[in-house]
Amino acid sequence: MTRLPLVAAAIACLVSPAMAGETLDRVTSSGTLTMSSDPEYPPQSFLNDANEMDGFDVDVGKEIAKRLGVELKIVTPAWEVITAGGWAGRWDMSVGSMTPTASRAEVLSFPAVYYYTPASFAVHADSSAATLADLDGKVIGTCGGCTYDAYLNKDLVIDAEGAPPFEYQVTAGEIRTYETDTNAFDDLRLGDGVRVDAVFSALPTIQEAIKNGYPMKVVGDPAFYEPLSVATDKGDAEFDAKIAEVVGAMHEDGTLTALSEKWYGVDLTTAE
Figure 1 (cartoon, one colour):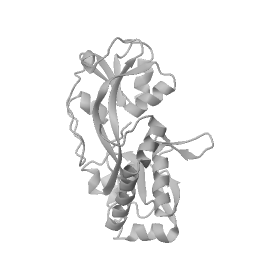
Figure 2: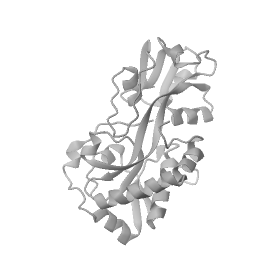
Figure 3: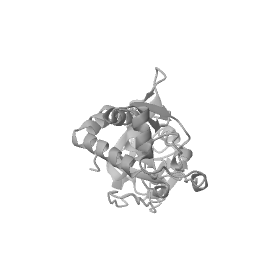
Figure 4: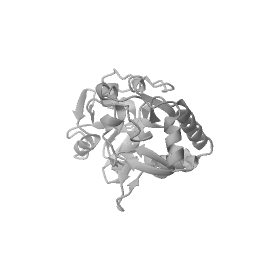
C-alpha cells in the first residue's frame, strides 16, 4: 500500500542537511551504499525464509549499488524517521516506494521515480461486478487516512512532479475504513456484500493477497497511478545526479521492467 504518514518536521530541524558531495564521497570512499528499507512490506521489501531482505525495492537497491561499484547495506529505521529527513549520514538513500509529495520535498530530495503504483478496485470472486460503474453506491473498504481513502472522498491531491492526471470514476455509497489493507481484504473474503462489496488498494497488494488465497478479482482499469521515487537527504546535488543517472539507465536498458515483472508479473515502471 502507499504510505503517506505525517512528516515529523521537528525531528528534521535537529540535524543539518548533507553538504554538497558529502554523501557521494562517503559512499565512494567506504565502498558501501547504505539503504533504508522496511522488513514487513511485501512484495516490496521483507525478510525471506532465509532471514534475508528481499523484494522489489531491495532488488532495485542492489542494482543501484552494483552500478555504483559498491556493496549494499540495508538498515530498517521507522518510516516516520525516514520521511523526517535529517539523516545525518546514518543511511544514504531510501528505496522504499515513497511518494514524492511537495511536503516531503521540504526535507528530502527525490532524484528518480522508478515505478508507479496503480490504485485498483477488487471484489469478491463471486461478485457480478464487471466495471467500475458497477461499484457506484456500493460499500467499499479501504485503508483509513491513505490516498485510497482520499480518492473515495474525492479530495485526493498528488502533488508530485510528473504525477499522471486522474478522474473520480467511482462514487461509493459507503466508505468503510480499516487500519490496514489486509483488514479490508479479510472482510471481503467473508463473501460478496457480507461486510463490503469491494475494496480499494494498490494493485500489487491486491495481487499478492489473491496469490495468497484471497477469493478476490480486480475490476476495471486502475483509478490512478502514484509515482514512487528514490529518496535522499537534502543537500548533495552531486549524489542526486548520480542516482538519477543510474536509475535512468535502469529504465532505458529494461532492468526496472524486468524486476517489476519478476515481483509483480507486470511492468509498473510507466504510468500506463
